[in-house]
Length: 471
Length: 145
Image (cartoon, rainbow over all chains, first blue to last red):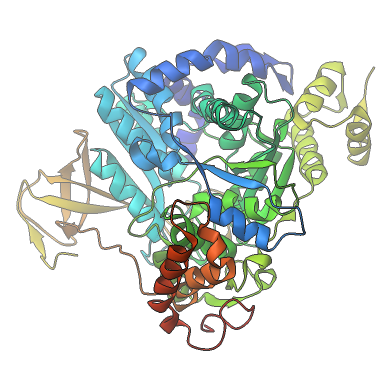
């Protein structure tokens, strides 16, 4: 087998061949790049995207009003408060999640460019989405997953996602914990000549724009107004980025985009020990924070998912709250979905309480549920791995140690992760990675676009890190 | 998992490969991960001759690739399931319905009287999970874990 360092040294060349995009031509100096140029030239517009997705039965998912959950939110809200909560039932996509939208464009692109197959490094629903789209378009498919700790114990949620990939005829490589998954993935790309169906190419992100666009159309058609708040489960940033871009393309200027993650602070994502002490494998801060503060850590040179450009607010919820809400969704609304995709629903209930009754909150996804990928499976697994599960106040949640299932819907809350903290961290990363000692006008403009912060804020952060500003 | 200890050519098997030994791991991984190997499992049809668990075996995967490693399972099964009943979840539905009361279903075509009947029927078959007090009152519902 080729050594780690030898393969990683050739990563640029391997990735370039495997995505068919020359990222270099969008670079604008040591820090900045032309993001919108990249999205426009290498992606697809909304109408093309819809056409491609409809070819394989993706999209046009129902928008459902959660009447009983809305009533429950109102029962715990101040008088006159409690917005109507809707959910876009993305589980209705082939492969059972919104990830089919991302995969649809990637696999279409691979087919158009005559790649013999597609590969993706993912432990999530995206694997099944790529596998499903690949079999529809007659391409080979390999999915590389991080599944087990060194005892060979696997997260039930990931094992199920691997099974689903196999069901669609994909080859699944199951790995133990560690970022060297990328090394294995690069070797697969090099050996097979497959297309890298990365979550983070312009295709992987443009595919999500149709969620925002469709939900805007659906809310307008039904209610004659725009949604007030759209809540998006946030991990790698594609969901926030694509949904918000779709909303903008639909002309929803005043709709607030709220990103929501499960709080797993304190757990190290590359730790063999911590790996099985978390009960969510996606939608959590272990991805949400690093991908917001430095998107270009992905498997392509420039990440098309840039969530800080789009989130109006970033809120955290706890694992116990999401399991509780998953149960409410099944028992009050007759929809057995999730659990990870219900992170945004948990946040939406708390957010709806602060809004007026005539306002509209849209939860923009659901995902299929099944063996392994279910509250009882995940909580049984947590218990077997030494995590305490009990009823109580979710404020007492301790990631990796205690999962607290609320006793009352009034205990569902969100805690705001300050956007300025994310922006500060982003600016520090951008300066460090670029190696520049002073920020010029082009870099300043780029930092403003990337963080949506004012120049005064950016200047104060740069001063704190001893970076100068020219002109 | 199948109890079989050996496989014949052509059978569906799983192999195990050590991808990186401890010490050869990426520099950025934490110490507890540095100390263990990076391992990989793959499934396919056995193309080398008869092999026993632990012996070297070559497989052809569903994409037609040939991979070699140690035979780790013969006819590997998916054994994940729905876990055990979780007492902390069992009463959530009935608690929420009780909080909503019968007006919860007033939006539907069912009359309020039917709603009440429906609601009480649902409660009737569920309340035995939480016999201790009113589950709608914070602190009273569920079973401590």
